Image (tube, rainbow, N blue to C red):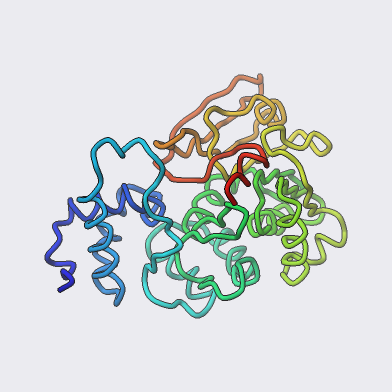
Length: 301
């Protein structure tokens, strides 16, 4: 018989979720226990917590430094959220979305246009988009947009490294507007082609047509010098260390959000001061696919 959420201690449940599915948790650590309480109201919560806990118990201690055990695309957080607006309200309710501007942009850019057909686009979970790549969970997109919002003002320039299906690049484009630049780079040509089609169906279509939004095939580790320097840089894959090319392409006064680490990863916020000096702080623990070469990413695909 499946355990009920009440049969699983909160500490054990949190340990299981952190290890087996860390990107399910809100980015703000203070919300974790509140989020666990919300899971208890979900028809999927019993299965979710029990599966995570069971996996956690079965892991040999020697496996703690190996690859993540479960892909979060297999989990559901609150059942089926049937509308993009409902998803945004959900993220606001749990404090992930803090500002009206970011909420408005996420409501305008329909996530359902940027996920593979047959997926559940409005569930707060990352999911596979093919080619050993994923689209991040909505709460991570919201977190990154909130962290970068002051550097996504009209007329500013933004770079989205590992742009995948184009979702966050489209959000950036709406924020910086027609006088700004939103550049997405992705080293899988098929994903770039698909992302362009996704954007053409979205509220950012005119910005793509006018050229203020662009998507390119390129190795994200080296950035995109043609439109540099950037007020905002987002990196959607985890680097072992922050690439020097991205630091160089960050504008004085600019900000970069990048996951750093191998098995244990932190979402780091990099700020370049007007004098060119760099400060870094850690926002939260995360789990991303690695920032690597195209050949390494496609190995065994």
